Image (cartoon, rainbow, N blue to C red; front, side, top):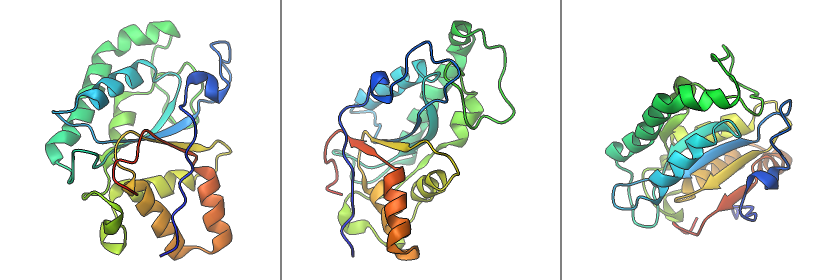
Length: 208
């Protein structure tokens, strides 16, 4: 197996992307979240709430449930915790939309401008599970998941913006996506894929 490349960048803030509240005609930065949200570690649930409050600043392309430091296998009931955050977002959305005077949602919610609040259905359609088991040793043909396929699909979209991968939990869903591209594409296309997905990982939660 070729060595997987993970580009680790400094902590991402709004200023990292170079946007200010005045950039109303700018497209949002694209992000995919890998989260090991659980009932016994509440940090990711709290982070999801904070993310929803700033959903007008990011084009959230994926909310992928993964393994993590204290979660060796994913659990279907924990995926619901992401949906709980989206449900709470839906309740507060009428108030949040007052910030930008938004009164409805676009039929096509791709290529969102800063200040646009995505619909709850848009977020639900992008919520899924990644690798079921934790660790580098599981990466391979038996580890393909909806999450790894989704990362590839989003990175392949015709869009000049990078697809920021924010790893709150384990990273082997991303590692799996890279492995799949390695198997199917020549070296030049692999490099182009890696160039498209700058990544910030909080810590090495599953050694991938």
